Length: 343
Image (cartoon, rainbow, N blue to C red; front, top):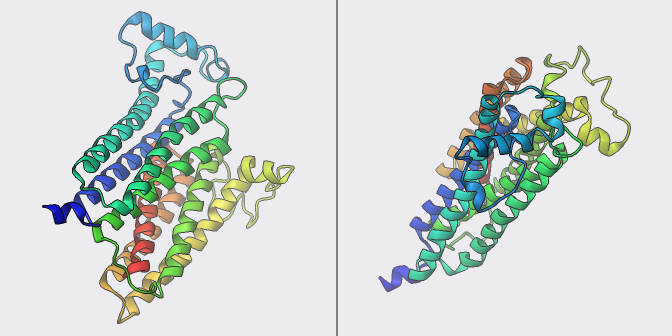
């Protein structure tokens, strides 16, 4: 028993970290649905503790509704909305926040327990503390994002949406990576495999692509230029420039969609080429080959889904599946990058 407690490897800890990563995945998916249904501004107060309890009476519902009626989104977009319709968007946002609170509990409780019994690998203790701090920071960033839509805008600022998603995905990737560390222990080869650079590049590009997707979503850029492979019949959109570098890159509908397309093409080419090379490599480790092939297949499916979502003008169902697919591709890319470092 004592040798187990001193071990630098714990598959139970790994399973716990991956469970937390799954909850982050669920939060990202529900967050996507919250955005697509226009629900993200329905709760206009941030109450980290008491906010877990939803309105329990008609009077409480009316008070919540009256607060929502004071913001621009109601006055300019949803004026005349019924209380029942408000409840629908409220529950989406409430569920999104509930998963965030659940994440804190599911992380903190087992972490303290693992420390108490000495089952946490020592080399991962500081890393897990950093992960917990990132989770707490995410709550603040989420509220910072929401505040951007409460006074003058009818939706949250795209750059804040991308920041919120980006931090969530950093936490997601770090949980997956640390889970692999806990699963295998500290032993590692003297140098990475030859697959490591390309695996790291693909993972970084998939992360970047996710942020670009957030800008597309935040600017509702999926509702314009819905032809493919051209954009309004042109290879390069005529309205790419929006009057300033940051205005173009962060708020130009044509620009953010075009950038999202370009990075998708690059990821597609790299992932498929890597998968083919892995299949042909006789001496590639089985795990590396399997992850490379899986990543290539997932990227192909995600690109096809993205095109379908665009051409259908981003319906909620396809939009949610596309965002979930992006998170799955990212998890696979991170696992491939980790395995390429240590195979």
